[in-house]
Image (cartoon, rainbow, N blue to C red; front, side):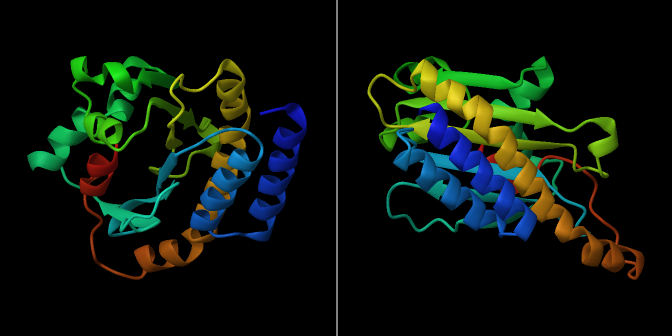
Length: 214
C-alpha cells in the first residue's frame, strides 16, 4: 500500500471518527479501502472493553466472504470454564502476558502452536495473521477501557509484505482512535445507567465472546 492511499485512508478515519460513524461501519470502510489501496486483507477483527454495566466490551469484524457471523458483538465477563481457558490460549492473552504490541503468525506453520482459533482461520484459507494491542496512556484510560485489540489476515500465499505490515502499523492506531471515540460516545448513557441502578457489574475477567474470537 503506497503512501498516497495510506494518507487518504487516515484522513477518512479522522473525518469519520469526528462525525461519529458507527464502529462496524468504520471497520468495514477501513478494510474495503485497504483492499482498494493494494493491501489484500481477508479478515479483520477489533474489540475494546467498555463501561457497560452488563457487557464487558464490544467487538467488530469484517471478512471478504459471505458468512453468518454478525459484524458486531458484545461480550460479558466470566472467570471460569471453557471461556476462561480459551482466553488464556488466545494470542492477545499471550501478548499481554509477555508485553508484546505485535504478533505475526505464518498460518502454514500453525500446527505447532496452541493458540485458540488459529487452526480454524488456516482451514478457511487465510495464510498470514498479525495481531496488535494498542494500549492507552494513563490519562486516556477510562475504567477497564485501557486498550484496543485487533487482528488482520490475508490469503496471499506469501503473506503480508513488509510494505503491507508497515501500512497496518501506520493505519491501525488511527482506526483504534476512531473506534475509541465511537465507544466513548456510548459512555454517557452507560454511566448514567450505572449510577441509577443497583444492578452490579460482573467482575472484570475474560469473556466468552472474546475467547471465542481471539
